[in-house]
Length: 115
Ligand code: AMP
Image (cartoon, rainbow, N blue to C red):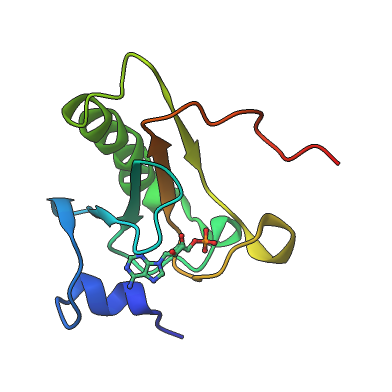
């Protein structure tokens, strides 16, 4: 089942797009959790990390090269940032089109909230 991200890829709904090529699209998160919060998505609709195929490797590798490019452009590369891919319920995934979060611009603290 298609998600809102397919509509963003098709330009049917607006998004603040920061990068696009043949394999991936990157746009600013609508509810940013940090000064830089960008979603980088493969154009093929992969529902979750459970659904990746060998022929997705080029697109999935591109997520990292685009993240590094955007981090440099946003001036957060040297201080650092966090890349997150959530999967299914325990991972907190809300949109079932695989996406990489690029978060930075402030100290993000420990990787997981301490209980
Ligand atoms: P996740 O919990 O990993 O599935 O993250 C989904 C993310 O998509 C959340 O951070 C949302 O704020 C973001 N999001 C949902 N709808 C949109 C949209 N139309 N444009 C940009 N970001 C969105």
